[in-house]
Amino acid sequence: MATALRLLRPPWKDQLLAVNKYLLLIPIMVIGWFVYRQKTELPQVPFAKTARGRLASTLSTNGKVEPLEYTDLRVATPGIVARLAVRQGGAVAVGQVLAELSQPGQTEDLAGAEARLAQVRAELAALEAGGRSGDVAEIEGAQARLRTQRESAQRNLEALRRLVQANAATKFEAEQAEQAVRDIDSQLQSLSQKRGALVSKPDLDAARARIREAQANVNMIQGRIARNSVRSTAGGILYNLPIREGAFLNAGDLVGSVGKLDPVRVRVYVDEPELGRVATGQAVRITWDALPGREWTGKVEQKPTQVIALGSRQVGEVLCTIANPSIELVPGTNVNAFILTQVVGNALTIPRTALRRESGTGVYILDKATNTAVWRNVKTGASDALRIEVVSGLADNDVVAQPSDITLKSGLAVKPLIQ
Image (tube, rainbow, N blue to C red):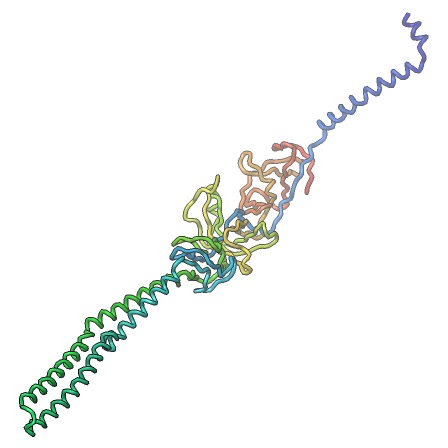
């Protein structure tokens, strides 16, 4: 029956079935070819040659800018900021007014004190002139009246004396006239003594003491008003000015900070394991992300005296002095710091990426005779961001393996790709 059916089926259908079988075999053959190739083809591994040259070992970290020298300026008396005479970032001189404060009632207090001083000065002038004008006028008026009366009494006495000589008057009448003149003289003498008693030395001393007291009060108020002018006690750049017009300041509040900004100090934070590489006098390079392409240079001035916590880091604060001629670096700026810790001339170097830590520190070098990777322990020295010095373990023209997807082991045959 099956034979009969095949005889009835057209020949082209048998040909189509045969083609389908071959198409199914193609993917299987391709996969088998790739598996075979991977088993028989050597792994490709990138290698790099050793090189000689100048190597500058740099410690990279961060830091913060500070003024090299600075002075904080504070108010001595409370008051309201009436006027700001400077702007933040400007240069100021010693004695320059930074701000004016105002205190309610000070002007009135000064006017009252000056009026009191004028009053006591007038009182002293009156005493030095002989006394108060009213008392002096009263005594002088009485003296004038008595002098007039004496002149009249004297004329009467002289007339009576002539009459007594002519026996026209009695001697008793003449004596009474003489007594009247003596009484007036006595009254005049009493008034003169009274006028002299108007001003005594204690009175003058007391008046002069009142003047000194009044003058001291005026000086004190003037001093308070003068302290309302806040002046700089140092010259430099006013890099911090936290106050604003209209703000109230208590005694001791900060008005501003004046500092020296060329050069500046950069407090560089070095991680504890790296502190042994730092030495006084090493060159320092500073960059700031806000001004790409700009660099500032200086040197290490002081090594850290202690290790402190900085977030999750344990760091030492290395103090560096950095030239800042354009005053572009301002206090508080966060900067990048690069300390040149070592310079080696004609150093044998390899890429940092070639260094591995397996059974010690070393590299895989290429055995050129057999094209196999061979482990080699090495001793390293200075380094920069890209390359590291090899002090021992390698020679000129050695070739070291670079990182790749291939897991290397000593003796592995490889197909080197020398870069």
